Length: 469
Image (cartoon, rainbow, N blue to C red; front, side):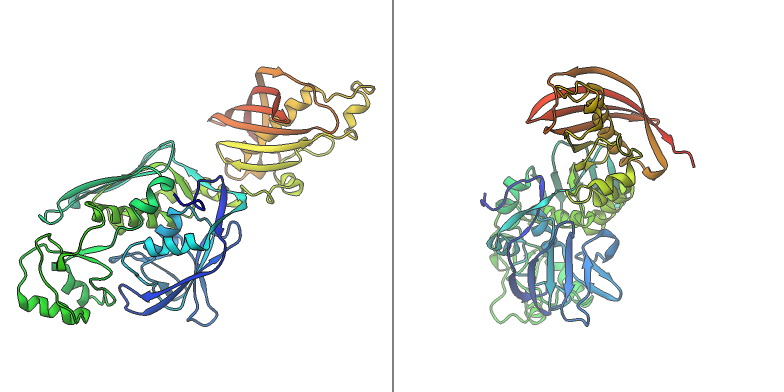
């Protein structure tokens, strides 16, 4: 595995500008692509350099406008064709923020796989940024099924991101095949990125008549032979693709005897396409995708359903999860507490409905030190608990709609333990995890640490109530 490519809890971008040139698969345009570093939380964006004003577009499921033999995005009258291989390369390397400049309406197809893009991105180098990576945890199954075509695609809860894909073709040259991507870090670069796009010989004339595959050829796609072919058809094929060299039928079931990079290269490429389409959700996923005979249309439908079902969680992740987003001013907008009873100074990170990490800085100027063991100042244990509870309250409020209209009332504390005193100069690291949340009542598991040592831990019960007008 390349040393610049590793799993991280922080967002990533590339080190420097890198570029490639080539022809677009469907439009046939000569295109140059520039990959540019981008700031935190900016996402994956495309930029059309050939249009006045150089408009940008976010790679997002709401911008999908065409799924005929590829995924195209667009807005305000302009579009970008066939983005799935680019998105697969970026997502497979777990790059969160990048600007992709194009001199034309379609990126170059290169060899028909994601490998050329992966190679140039690794050459640029991948660097961590200062903001935590966003992730959507799937906690319930979502499916898209088309019974008449035998198409099924599901996403299920899992402890990591995985894809299992099955294709089933009736042609002897292809047949049925299954593959699994268990780990982006360990599988993507060598086992999936090199898989090339493909089609069947019987599809070529129709695709060409629809104005597609204008830039297609035997150097950027695999052509499987799904029926008997005569010499007249081969001559016509050479004319369509402007091929000057010989074109011939081979015994391995591929035009011109092209050698597969993997015995199951087609299903690996379908997995690659799916990975690129999933990038349109705009957030990393923790879940297991199981697909059978799925294509761009079904992939896009599943992403739409995920976004609709998890819209609030995704919005919260996009609004939160930044070191700079939750300083004291931001906290005051959500929390009802004020001096001297606001006991959280900074939110380091928050995953709505899951966990929050925060800081309380303890100084000698705290008002409680004047009366609580003034000759040997010790922070009251009940206030450490209160700080833990406030961090938990922040988590709960950011897991529900319209948090500014709600309050958190704490109704019980159990299994609390005080293990070490807290004194002026200490920095308390607060962690709270949402264990249960039903019908407005929640259970929070919280700890407080100083110098990585637990000073207090407790289980806190609370209820969400409406604020009075």
